[in-house]
Amino acid sequence: MSRGILDTSIVIAGDDEELRPVLPKEAAISVATLAELHYGVLVAKNDETRRHRLRRLGIIETTFRPLAIDEKVARAYATVAHAVKAAGAQPRARVMGLWIAATALVHKVPIYTRNHADFAALTSLIDVRCV
Image (cartoon, rainbow, N blue to C red; front, side, top):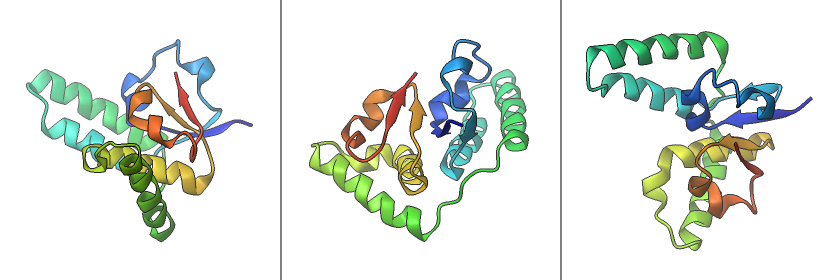
């Protein structure tokens, strides 16, 4: 069975029928994705967008049990942040994505994303699948 962690960009895409066949059968999310989605609700530009995001967040919270950021993920975060820095990019600009990547690294699963550039410096550490 295929396993993987979904980046926030995939989770936001929601029920995009084109994504379904290329995603893992056993999909997980990081608690960092959940944090990004909660933030998205708070910064919505209008009530209609906020309601849509809140409804989507409710579906995600009932669908997934997010993987925690623990001591192992914290150590892996240092590794992925260093890889980004070594590639000449700024880790601080990608903090949430790096937490998601660190979670994938610890759980030894691919990360599925629509933003390959966010993870390009990490392909020697993590299997990054751009869909």
